[in-house]
Length: 130
Ligand code: ZN
Image (cartoon, rainbow, N blue to C red; front, top):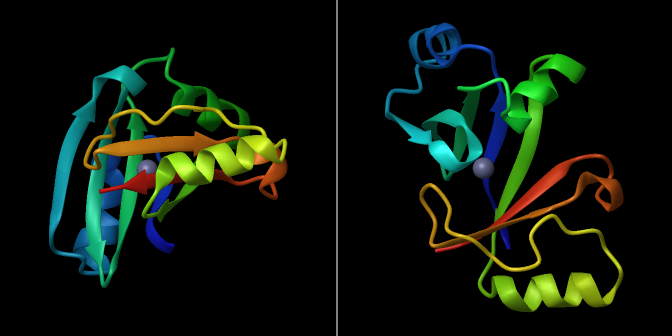
């Protein structure tokens, strides 16, 4: 299990790219729409991990609600795992609150699933399997 990316909720990707890309110098990035979550993401390379800037594209987006409630900030951590189903079923068996009991297709991983922040120290956790 390893940290794959850090997701940061932002109001404007363009604004924040001026800092992450132009000032901090993270050169390689892709921007893509994730229509089912009503967000746009910018993925920046930082060594072995990625920084994911997440901008809501719609007021019905959960990320929009997150920013309304808490302001911009750390949104989730994503851990890359080898067997996502095994981890999910083990967590479920132990009564940990999951958002996705069954993995779904992610923006750039074959399988992703979210674990509710409630049991995770208040941080939303994403698991991904490539
Ligand atoms: Zn993510």
